[in-house]
Image (spheres, rainbow, N blue to C red):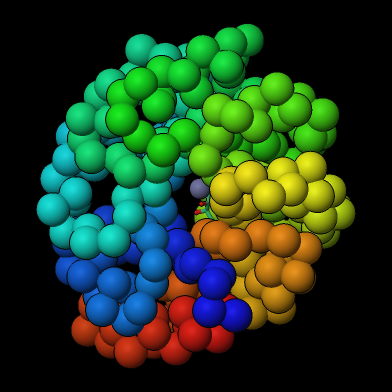
Length: 218
Ligand code: DX5
Ligand code: ZN
């Protein structure tokens, strides 16, 4: 389906080669570039901060889609916005004032994303729908690439799409996307698919055609 966007997660890229990795996946036809920020507190893993994002920003010609798995969030929003995030996504579970966080993200000039862990229901998004441009449904517990897709989230996505109605809100899926799980999510109403291992697996900057084959297989 042409309206489905593929957002490779550079968590699965060669960290010593980010510039080239990004050029390769964009040349191979990805739509967005997904950047996973982890703080070792909200999730049990550590990744990138604002200086790294600033360094890779000039290599990204498409959309820099930044997924903040950090808590607290608010005091870092301006740093990630300044680093060049186009979409800045915060977790509903990251603090008691998600509405304020989303206000601050839009105030910083970014599209606002709201991420939901697999154990979180969709009741709490009702009064946030006018505050978000994207809702990210986590189909693994956040923290690591290469985990197994959680099937209970298919029903969640279907209900969320119904709730969103004709509002211009993307539904992004993150975790465990493969050629097998991608069609299930597209059918349920998702339009942005994040994929780490399924895009980068088997390829390299010296063998970038594999990335293209992987992207087209999703
Ligand atoms: C997990 C991250 C994902 C991850 C996806 O916490 O948010 O973006 O990189 O990796 P795969 O596609 O390998 O499940
Ligand atoms: Zn992510």
